[in-house]
Every structure is written in C-alpha cells, then in structure tokens.
Amino acid sequence: MREGFYWGNSVSSMQTEGAWDKDGKGMSVYDIREPSEFASDWKVATDSYHRYQEDFDHMQNLGMNMYRFQISWSRVCPLGEGDFNQAGIDFYHRFIDDLIARGIEPMICLYHFDMPLHLANTYNGFMSKKVVDAFARYGTRMVQEFGHKVKHWITFNEQNLYHMRETFIISGYRQGNKTTEELYQIQHNVMMAHAYVANYIHEHTDCKITGMLAYSEVYPATCHPEDIRMAREWDEVLNHNLLEAFTTGKYSNFVMALAKNHNINMNILPGELETLSKLRNDYISFSYYASTTIDHTKIPAGTIVNEYMDYGKKDNPYLETTEWNWQIDPIGIRDILNKIYWRYKCPIFPIENGIGVIESWDGKNEIQDDYRINYHKKHFQAIYDAMYQDGIDVMGYLGWGLIDILSSQGDMRKRYGVVFVNRENHDLKDLKRVPKKSYHWLKRVIASNGLNLE
Image (cartoon, rainbow, N blue to C red; front, side):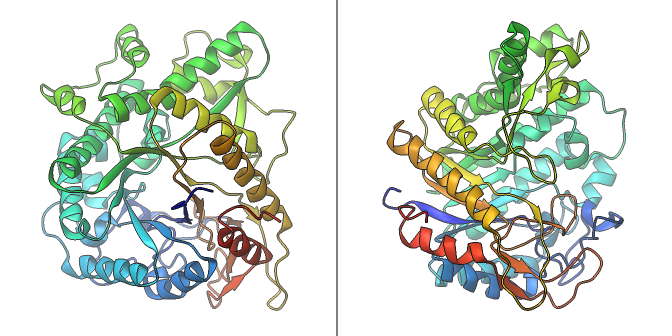
C-alpha cells in the first residue's frame, strides 16, 4: 500500500465500553433494551471502559496506526442536552492520550445509534429539530475539547441507514406511524446535524471531516431491464444521495424528484439548504461487508425506492455466504471504490469491513480462523488492485471489531475479531483477550504494508 496508509480498527461505544451507569453517564436507548436468547444486555459489553489499555496494547502490537471509536453522547452529556459531564469528558481525554502514546491516531465518530434516552422520550429523537440542535451543540463541544489532538472526525455511522426503515430503530424514534414521510424528515434532519458540525469544523479548525455510509452494493438479479433499472435507482437513493450532499452540498436530483412525485414533505426549514450548500467533506468513508441482488418481480407496483429491498432482495447464486447470510464478495469493494472515486474525485477510506462468524474457545488452544484470513486476504487484494490497477486514491483500511465486540444486535456469538474476548451472551466469564491465528497473519500483513498477504 502507499506510504502513510492507515491500518486500524473500528468500534462503537455501546458495543465495547460497558460501564453503563458509571461516572455520571446518562441513560441511552440501548440501556433499556431487554436481553434475549441470542442477545446480551449492554451493561458490560467487552468492558473496554476499564480494559481499553489492554486492547490498545494488542493494536499497537499488531502495528495499527489508527483507531476509530465513538464518543458516547450520554456519557459526556447525560441528557443529551443541558449540562455536560466532566468525568465523561475526562475519560475520553485519557483514552485519546493513551492511544496517541502508542502511536495510534484517533478517529472520532459522534453517533452510532445510541440516542440519549431523554432525547428519545422527550422529542422522539431525530424527528425533532431540537435534537438536531442538541447534536450540533454536542458535536461542536466535542470538537472544541478534542480537536487539537484528534484530526479525523465522523458525525454519523453509516448515515444512509436513515434512508431505510432501519431509521426508526437507530434515530431515537419512539412513537409514530413509521411513515415514508417521517423517514424522509429524519434523513434530512440527520443530514442537517452532520452539516452543522462539518461546517463548524471547516470554519474553526484544521481537522478533517468525513461523511460515512454503509455502501449498499446491489446488483441486478438478471439482465432484465427492470432489474437493472431498480438496481440503479437503489444505488442513487441509498448511496449517491448522501455522496452528492457530502461533496457538492446538494441532494441528488433524483431523490428530490422522488420526494416531490410522492408528495413527501421533508420539513426543510428556511435557511437549511443554504447551510447544506456550504458542506464539503475532506474524504469519503464507508463500510462494506457483503453484496446482494435485486429481483424486480418480487417488488409490488408503486413501491418507493427506499423500500425496494424489503421485497426484492435475492441471494446471489455465485457467492458464498456467512452464517448470517451475508454474501462474501471481495470484488464488490473494488467496484465501490471505483464508482465513488470516478464520480466524486475524492480520497476514499473504507473504515469498516470484516466477517462475523460463530466461534468458541476451548480455553487452551489457539482458534484456527483460516476463514477470516481468507476473507481479509481477498478484500486486501481487491483494495490493492483498485489502487494500483485502477488508480483509486485509498487512504487506508479499518477492520470492524478486530477485537471481538457485541454485534449490532447484542449477539456475542457473531465475532469479527482477530482477538477473542472470552464472554458469551449471558456468561461474562473472565473477558480475557486471546489472539487467534488471524492475529499473527494480520501483524505480518501490516508490517509489510500489505505487500505480504501469505
């Protein structure tokens, strides 16, 4: 890879930190989620609040030079509005300083779905402009606190998820009819929250800001023209709408026409589009895990594009799949890098990627996770090919949860890490960190800057 290439790890706060009620932290929407057969509660996670230095030591030993983590909004501002919590802010100062002391550059994400419970209950989350303002206040305060030593910032994890019905789970939405119009209002409010913080960063600091999406790589199921059309429309709405806003300060013309044709009121207030027009991101970041296909014959007539995949998703017969039916497609990441770069001419940074697998440890022998090595090897090769055969400007690679964490659904069975964390969904055990076979392989890869994949 190129000189200065970033190798690192990405996580969220609620999937790692634990300490849900320590040192003045307020409640988030995750703190009231009930455990189930295949989902833990979120009270301990992997206890990185108390054990993060051990995790940092593993990252340093691997040779990583970047860590993308999330600040817990309710840890630094218990209600999401009102007073800030100095103990929470002090924790992140120590956290950041300990990263930097190990030669690992921090990247901060401000929101990864864990809305402060007060904002969800009082204002219905990002349905409310008051929560947009609260986020802007929180985000700018964090930049003021940490911007002198943290130069890379993300506002929202996988921001295009707010273009899907997933938004009613991740936005702090607590009541309503979950209408398409509400979906569009939330996605616009989230974009404005991003714009306020991004514009502040560019006006007042030397930091860099990126907009991030979960790139939804969807191929036509066949060469039928309707499959091709629907795949293109999905790509435009779910991916390019955000990318256009991040790079030009305007929503996709197709999306604006879509909203008009469906009589959708996005609740765009006077002055908001002017604020949006000032938006420019320094680079583009995305997550990528899998691809799939779309079959137009499954989609009812009149379905809005945002809901195509609720009906039309079809497995790709040419790809292997994981236990969670995420289809493994290394070529997909090369395709995405090309599509983004040649349309937007902007540096690109894949900051989440990995394979979730059910694994267990016998307490003695090293986990032989050759499947993980094979997955990453093929994705690294695809990124290398994008850089050196296709001419794409790729900044680095951050794997997801490379030290095991709770899954996004709270399921500890789904493990992404090259380091095993010894706990199960309902048995915390000793939380011991245990390197897997892939750990030693990844260390060699990073030491060679990606040239040795064997």
